[in-house]
Amino acid sequence: MGDYLTSIRSRRPITTLVLAGPEHSASKARDALSLAVRHVFLFDSAALMKNLQGGNVKLGVATSVRRELWLRAELYPEQRNRTLPLTPPQVEALRLLSGE
Image (cartoon, rainbow, N blue to C red; front, side, top):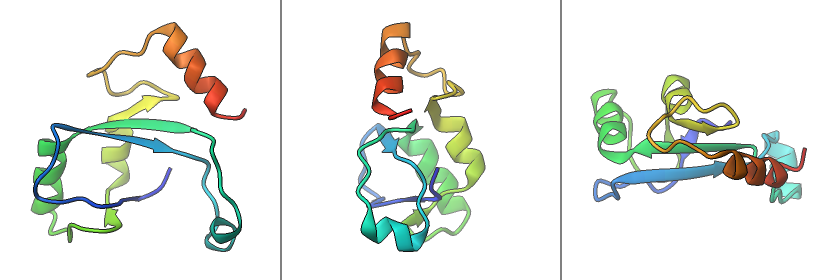
């Protein structure tokens, strides 16, 4: 799970869906392209923006997001966010995309 979201702007959608692949070190990230989905997150955009602005976080490319917010937004592999309950077939489809 990364610590950054790209392209956070003040004009935003209602929710932000993030599909994240396996973590790579900085040197490996340049050499590998991963198509695996290991984590899925769903952020309430208004709440995320309010939280980021309250923390004096610079919005833009590679906006830093606290781990606590990532955990709260997680849909897969552990469904902590109950905004969009995943069905067993959806969880299985995501498991297939994980490459594990």
